[in-house]
Image (cartoon, rainbow, N blue to C red; front, side):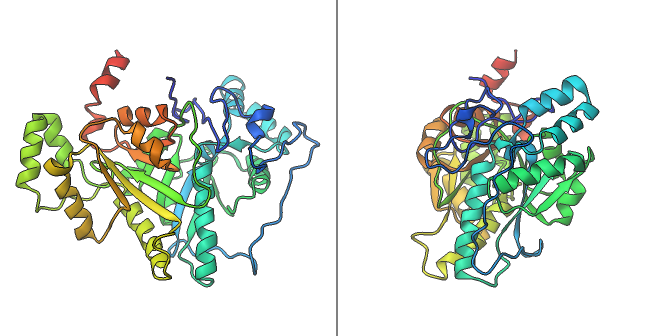
Length: 383
C-alpha cells in the first residue's frame, strides 16, 4: 500500500469522511459527494459563492475559556485537503502560492483525515450543551496553520461551508506554532508535520502525526471513538525498552516482577484523562450506556502475561477505557476495523500502516525507544 503522512513538508492529506480517492486532490465531483447529502457540490469558479448554512444552536453559542475546555489544535493540512495548493507552493514559490489562494478563496477545501474526528467532537459538544447549558467543559477546536493571514479568508469560507464550529485560528506565517499551543492550554495537537509534532511532545503537549488510509471505513456520526496503544502512548516506554534490549521472555519476566509497580505516564495519558472527565459528566446524568464518547486500549501485550500491570496502572490513575483488547502480538488492523475509531494512536509505524490498510485513520506518536529501533518489517522496507 502507499501510506503517506499528510506531512513530510511536501506530502499532503488524503481522504475525508465520505469516500475519496486518496490520489486525488479532492476537487472532483465524487470528492464532494456524501451519501446523506452532508456536502453540496460547489462550482469551481471564483465567482461561485460559498454555501453558508445557519448554525443551529439554541440560544446562540459561546466559546469556553481555553483553561476550562479540552482544547484540540488541528493543522489545516490534516483538517482539509490541500495537495494542489502544496504543488503550487513547491513549484512556483510563496508569492504565487498566496496569489493562488486569494484567487480561489471562494472554493472550499475538501475534508481531510481529521475531519470526521472534529465533527465527532462537535457532536459530543451538542450533547454536553443540552445537559450542561452553562458549562465550559467542552471540546474547543483551534485551527493551526503556517499560512499567511491572506489564506485565512479561504479557510473561513471552508469552515462556513462545512458548518464547523471553529472560531479560534492561529495563522503563524511560517513560524512555529508551539508557543501558541501552550498558551491555548492544548490537550492534543494533530499535525501533518512530524517535526512539529516532536517539538510539541518535547514541550509536554500530547501530539501525533496524522495518516490517511487508502480506503476509508465509515465511522459513527453520534459517538466519538478514540483508540490508544498502551506502551509509549498511554504509558511510558519502560517495558518496550526491556523488550527491545532483551527480547520477549525477559519482557514477560520484567512485567511479572513489576506487576504491582505502576507504569510511568506516556504522552497521551493526559488526553485520555480529559476524555474521561467528559465521560463522567454524561455518567452523572444517567448516560453511561449511551455515552457519546467511547475509548479503547488496543495493545500488543498479552493479557495473562503482561496485561495486569497495564490495567492496574490505569486503575491507580483513576482512569479507564471502555474496552481493552490484549492481542498478544496479533495484527491490530482487523480489530480496529471492527471498532471503527475516529482516530487511533500508536508509537510504531508498523501498526499505523496495519491500521491504515484496514481503513482506520491512524496517527503516529513519535515517542520512545521504538523510534530508534523500528519494527523489522519497517526496516526491511527502508532497505
